[in-house]
Length: 69
Image (cartoon, rainbow, N blue to C red; front, top):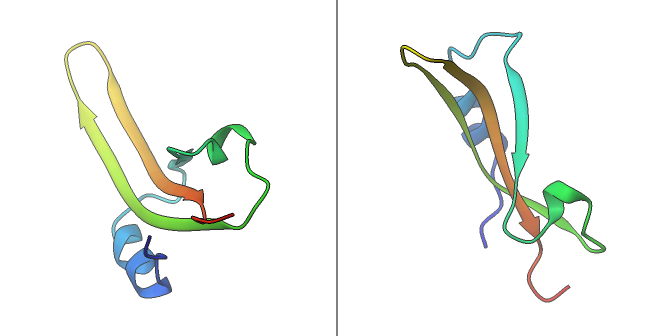
């Protein structure tokens, strides 16, 4: 598991509007408060697209509990 660096986060934030919603996702339950150990932020990305039915617009942060915790 590799931790996200500040440089990688800055790159992911390029051209993301200031009012964009941030969502936390996880495979280990971190996003639902099921973590008792150290949280490692692994990646971040901007998602924006529109269809005829809806628009998706959010900045996602992916984090998990550190392995071995």
